[in-house]
Amino acid sequence: MSNIILLADMESFYASVEVARNPSLRGKPVVVCGDPKRRHGIALAASKEAKSYGIKTGMPAWQCKKLCPRVIFTKPHMKTYIDVSLKITGIFEQFTDRVSPYSIDEQFLDMTGCERLFGTPREMALRISKKVLNETGVRCRIGIGENPLQAKMACDNFAKKNSEGIFELNYKNYARYTWPLPIKDLFGVGSRMEKNLHRIGVFTIGNLARLPKESLKKRWGAVGELLWLNSHGIDYSTVNPSSTETCKGIGHSITLPRDYSSEREIRVVLLELTEEVCRRARTIGKVGKVVNLYCRGANFDNPTGFSRQKKLAKPTAITMDVYPVVLQLFNTYWDRMPIRAAGISLSGLASDKQIQLSLFDNEEQKIALSHAMDEIRNRFGITSLFRASSLTSGAQLFERANKIGGHEA
Amino acid sequence: MSSKKIYDQFTCSRMMLPEHKERLKNYRKKLQQKEKYRMPLFDEQQWEEFQFILEHSLHYDAKIQLTILQEESYLEVQGVVKGLDTVKREITIATESGLRKLNAKEIVNIDYDYKKTP
Image 1 (cartoon, rainbow over the protein chains, first blue to last red):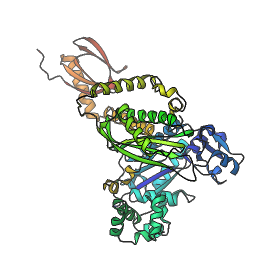
Image 2 (cartoon, helix red, strand yellow):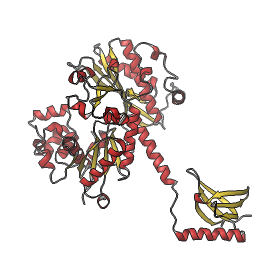
Image 3 (cartoon, each protein chain N blue to C red):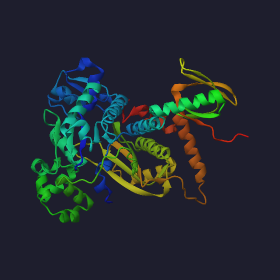
């Protein structure tokens, strides 16, 4: 018996939720857009009507306006989107207990063994999407496969493009449908990999599938092997609802409201990012071994910037132990060009139950202090206790407090 | 690179806001909690047995033990039945700390109290 895996993707999720909240927007070109003044002024989502004007996710607001003068902009409401996403998870759970959200607008469902209850995979998909539409006003497109990869490929490349919003791939028809597609449509192929593959004469998924697996493995290691498997529709992953995901790293990044060129201002933001990353590590009881700093230059056409990492002297989640390393990375790799975005992540996580004792550093005291600060912030809010530098120009702490993903909650 | 990606590519590439993850975790936890403290379904014979034990206690002062479900916690009550109100669906029971009225709807289990009391 084969497995039945569904991937449901919510169409124009943020925009659909906005329309459901405010029915007067129905049938109009709606674009959910961050604050244009703060450079988050890009389209986070566009309704079907807006998309018909050529508006795409990621476009700056002015360009949307140019393409469609009567476009309606709405502010994002991140908390509501999470609410609706969870509500949809709840609806899916009425069909199966194996539901695993993949992102805010995509969720995997394992419907294996539910044929007697809900019919063929196609009938299941129809029933599920109807229920979601009725209860939330959001239309979902569903890819069906015998494993998560086939479901994802069916959804991204076919279900999203046909009128019914449902498509089924299986081991039998996988090659027939996917092999003619350009290689960038294969799950796992990013823009860099696309270029690499073009260089060795691979332009379609079929081209890749016909290469020997060993040669790809030799060239790109596990990534090459994975892509080869994907090109054949083979996937060993399962839909794991609890997904007690062994969190590999904690990262936090920010797009700045304007380009920062003063070193002092950048340092302030780096400290705030370090603080946030360390705070999150402490909340889940982890310490990190490696810190990664990423900075992106301001010039879009000539992308500059770097992403470098450094091992810490000892595993830690104490802001003031991590920050000097961040600064060290920054001083070494910054080319003095203005910066548009920055991110810090902590990886190589381990439990904070064990600490390395040091002769001179009073580790316990520092940990206790950090936890005391966290407790105060948890209770009275993130802005109740902060570093004085967050009051200086360039600081983003107050701007980002109460926001989700950098957008209006 | 580890081969974990080969066996679990979607967990590895998952994109979720930390706030979303947190809320999902809480939601799952609550669901588990609800499942753990769910009112069981009894068949008719079970109700008859409960009824029998209650009557027995009422008429012969047999000490019994009741388990009731109250807001996500189990509560055990030991004592002797003093009254059964079939209209209000209430059981009056004499416990060590005095008379108590229990709602029949909350009852999960009724059994004789086998513990030896000094």
